[in-house]
Length: 449
Image (cartoon, rainbow, N blue to C red; front, side, top):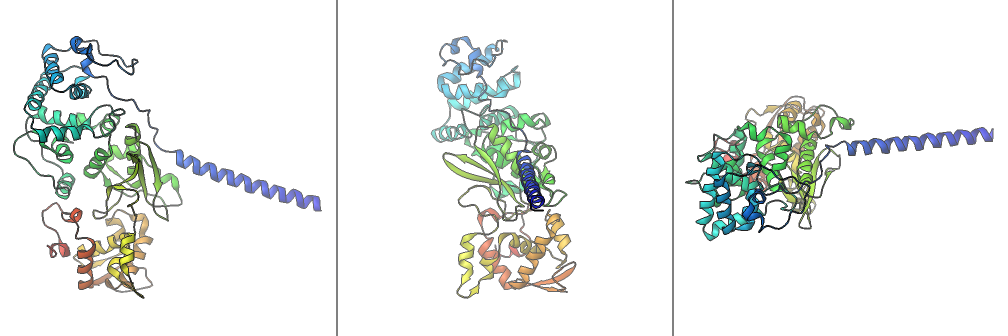
């Protein structure tokens, strides 16, 4: 009997160990199910090595395994590169790494190169300083080429303003204060202005290849800009108990421009790891339903978070020490007033999103299901329900009918004074001044101006 009991306990212990191993293997599998990132390839071989008189003056190639193109360059191209090398050898090497000069160089690119050399010859000191800053975007030792430099060439190739931007681009241009400048001298543009003028996504041949585009997005600033003007949040089917439904699909996101936080995080990690950055992905909310990409730069840790459904809380690049997912600690401190809580500062940011939605809803009639779908988070009706309950408890809104906290369908009234104070204190910020593309801030927000 004792022996049988011992065998029984050993068997149970073995089953438990097996379950633990299976569970551990499952989570390892989930963690590993990300897009495979190719090794960092390093810079393209500069075309200057194909010019005999310049090759003698250049340092030997670090990677001799990279083949040099055998076809000789047109005399006009060689002459222009010699002029540029005499002005700025480092700049000439970087221009020679651009994809535009890795193969055949047509007349349009020769004209663009000629314009560029003329600009450099006549550049003012502020323009030279701005160009030097642009050349430092990304990791020169890891990136294939300097993307801002490519953007300058695209503008010079085109020779005229780009075609009309998309609605999403216009919205971000307003947010980032990107405007039109008189004339075409890209040496005057700061990075985001340069990208806004150069990156025309209707030019399909430049934007339809996944590897080509992810080579181009070789710095956090470039990834951030691309995500802000291209990606739209879309929740995926499935629940938190089905991790396979949440696995980031960076290439699918690239193809559709729609995805959730895990897709955006995976895309960010793919681009930055490919560009030589140390990156990792992690969940940043206690319930595990929001994922972002972390990266290291100059010894500091940062987060890129563009995988949210709302316009108000998208944060882009932020130092990880300052990053708080849904509850700003400074606001919590301000919200503690003796034994009372100041609702304006106590309200968590995710519930603040619900409040902004209700403020902007002119009908004053909705449901939890409608709110969840409109915000792009249909799987999280439970969280929206909690948010509505919190808004009622903090007296931001009063709801009719208030039936068992279900909020399947309800009308509501706003506490006007409290809502206005909330908007002034929490959302009257530079990054939130222009959330709408029609140049008019809707509803309550317009009354604050």
